[in-house]
Figure 1 (cartoon, rainbow, N blue to C red):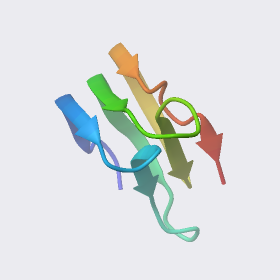
Figure 2: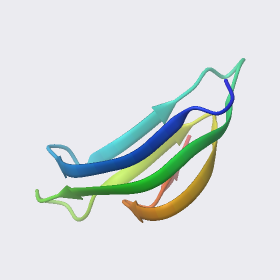
Figure 3: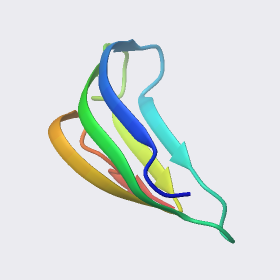
Length: 72
């Protein structure tokens, strides 16, 4: 997959893992646009995180949480 768009997402997350992008190992996603994300986690255990699996994002704008803080 090429060129999916995730933009201008704002709000709160009920889980610490606020963003999770998962693509197939056989067909990894490339140039997934992740732009202007602002998600807040107010629970225990620290701030929100973002996980990417088989994704190569094209990041721009505000990133909260930072894009792909955990890669698998």
